[in-house]
Length: 176
Ligand code: GDP
Ligand code: MG
Image (cartoon, rainbow, N blue to C red; front, side):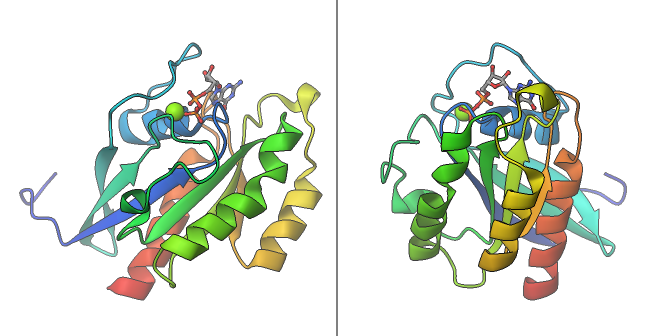
């Protein structure tokens, strides 16, 4: 980055949601601009980072990905500790992954900073033919819960950048 590697802020953001909704691919797209169709269940890796500029400040986004802990209440409190933002991800083709969102939200709100910035993310928007969750239902839920909402495709790189940028800018407004 021009001007050296000075980092003004480090913001921790967590990815949560059911297994196979695309959390790791969303992260791969954001951190490395990569995507894999046969991604293995995540093991080991705790987080990836990407540094970006917000309002001329250098912001290091530290994005945490669950390591196969997506069973109910298996995500530990260390995962949520210090998180200032969260992407709450479901798969638009899997109704169950959306039906579990209130649970994830409850768990998140029970563990995280009370000012945490939350973005509901309906991933796999490229699979329109298999859609099982309407955009309207998700939007309505997001409004009721006072969280941001976007539909993304990690495969097509649709709205992934937008989702992270929105969360990070909002965190920046609160914490800078
Ligand atoms: P995780 O368990 O939530 O981390 O899910 P993964 O990132 O491992 O993705 C699960 C599967 O969904 C993999 O086969 C991915 O290639 C696939 N996948 C992830 N994102 C998308 C997407 O936006 N569109 C499509 N069609 N498939 C996706
Ligand atoms: Mg994963």
